[in-house]
Length: 163
Image 1 (cartoon, rainbow, N blue to C red):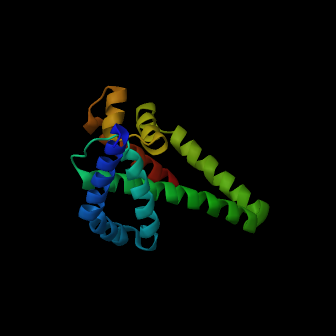
Image 2 (image 1 turned 90 degrees about the vertical axis):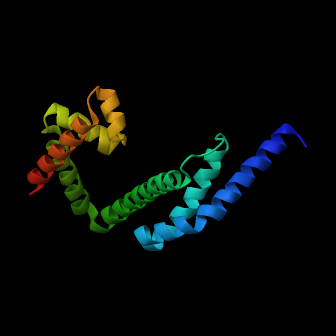
Image 3 (image 1 turned 90 degrees about the horizontal axis):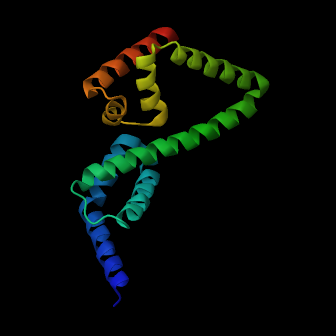
């Protein structure tokens, strides 16, 4: 048996063990949180897990990793469906729907640009770039608590402006 065949066999054995040990738990967790979408999310999670295990030797916290991957899969699925819904709703409502969506996007852009720069930087990195609080803190050279405080202030400001 070649060296590569042995590595694949070990990897597949780890994946089978991971699925055997945590597959039921993941399915139940996703069903509680996402309902009907849980099967699609679980399938995509395991596909990504296979890709991850191609390079990884061992995972210290498999459940944490599975939930992280599942949350990202759910977010991706939501974005794909939202884009599809926006396209359909724009077609259904004609020009009026497209104009309303543009007005809404412009309002949101103005609200975000109206944030003080330190709050805006944290908000954009979190919501648009997708960085965690720890990653934002590291990039900006500030404490994670400061990132949390700024994010709270930014969200409160946005909510107040939307009212």
